[in-house]
Image 1 (cartoon, helix red, strand yellow):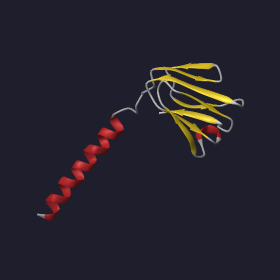
Image 2 (cartoon, rainbow, N blue to C red; image 1 turned 60 degrees about the vertical axis):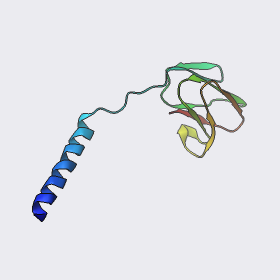
Image 3 (cartoon, helix red, strand yellow; image 1 turned 90 degrees about the vertical axis):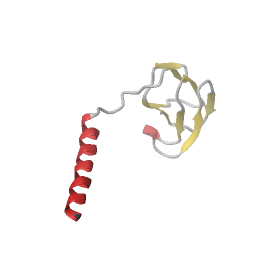
Image 4 (cartoon, rainbow, N blue to C red; image 1 turned 180 degrees about the vertical axis):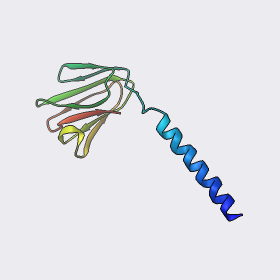
Amino acid sequence: MMRRRMAVALGALAAAATLTVAVPGSAYAAEGVLVINGAAYENPSGCYAVDRYPSSVGNHTDAIAEVHSGPDCSGPVEWLVYPGETYHTETAQSVFVL
C-alpha cells in the first residue's frame, strides 16, 4: 500500500517536471514604450541601463518598471514606476521591466 502511494506521488512529480521542461519560458514583454532619458524602448522586457544623471524614467507600458540603485538591475529597488507615471532620479543605475 505504501509503495503504491509512493509510486503515484513519484509519477505525479515526474509529470509535473515534464510539463515544466516542455512548456517554453514566458516570452512576455510589456506592451508600450519605456522612455529612459529620452531613449524609447518599444515593448520592453528585461534590464536597461541608466546612462546619465539626473535621469527620468517614463513608463508608457502596461507593466511596472523597477528602478534599481545598482547596475544591471542589482541593488535595492529605488522606486516602482507604474504605467502612465514618470520618475525622476539622481541615483538610479538601471531599470527592470516586469
